[in-house]
Image 1 (cartoon, one colour):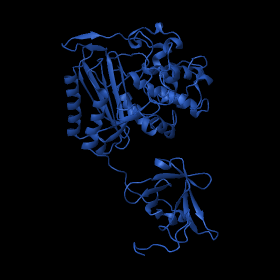
Image 2 (spheres, one colour):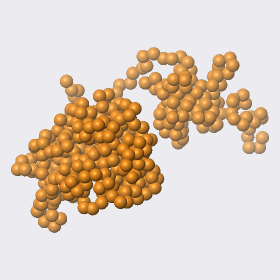
Image 3 (cartoon, helix red, strand yellow):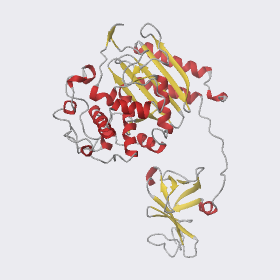
Image 4 (tube, rainbow, N blue to C red):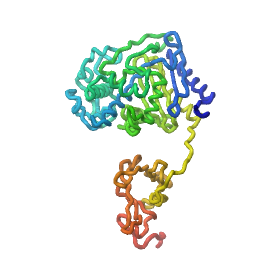
Length: 460
């Protein structure tokens, strides 16, 4: 049974349909299918246009192009979590003989390995995979264009290497591993390596006339891990829920968070965001969106989720160009989030309180800057500046009795409570920074000491 607020309001539903209808008409694409999910549940689907003689629906597959890379990245992190690889491993350790074995798994995942963006000619998306039977055919004679690890440079061949890495470690094809380890556990029944009817046909639309030309549908072979998949808007929204919460059958929430964590800065002026491990992280409409866009001849796709709003959207179309599917998906999220803001969970008091921790809460000073320390609902600590900008983090308990920073400047740093010989609290130590209960009190353990004359006026 759903709560009354879980279903979208009629005005919101109409606004979503209007946006998709305008996108299909103005971009001149044969058909568009879209879906929106809120808090992990699909709450709206819509489609416009005509495909193969009838309007598309939630079961109609489209090719999703580079959104495939996110699925491949999930498989790589599964290998890491099982201890079969390390993200810092050079490729050569698991896949020898490529000629680019010095690049690391992490660099391939984040497109910072310096590899070329595309394969050697002919254009791999419109030609048979038989033209590239080996990795050397994918990489070419000059596979590395930039210093390894120095910059973000998007590379389709890089994800071919990751697919081959998966096959080498698992001893099975990328397709088989993907189906067994991701698609089936997440019940993504309409996400497949090859189209399964009903599936939209890919078209090119004439730029100066309302005329169509069919695009070839090539099996990508070795390049499949970079862009092979077909899916539906509803399947992608279900996958977006996984990118938020994780699923222990596939990947933990902590490992999924790594997918979303920026791995390399983008090239200057290219796009307002970062790239994680197989995911794009962008800022649009005042929101941080995580997901990916994709395209192959005849198809464009976009999938985003706003973690803050709990809203995801997928947009699929069967035209080579014309529709910015990612932008439309972002706008669908904005329509829902602006019209129907997320309802927060009810505040609840802690079930129990650690009195020693409670005594630590309240104001602390880093020099003269006041910060507040509070207990969080999940049993952690949060340290934030009380006014103005500044450094702050959330901390989780560590095995040694300290606290480990989870975000911001202090991510990975250790917060410790330092006590006097009598057991009373002297100060907090955070990565060598000292936080005291008052600003520079004479008996505080402040590095460098405190002037014995204490605070004074300008003329004192």
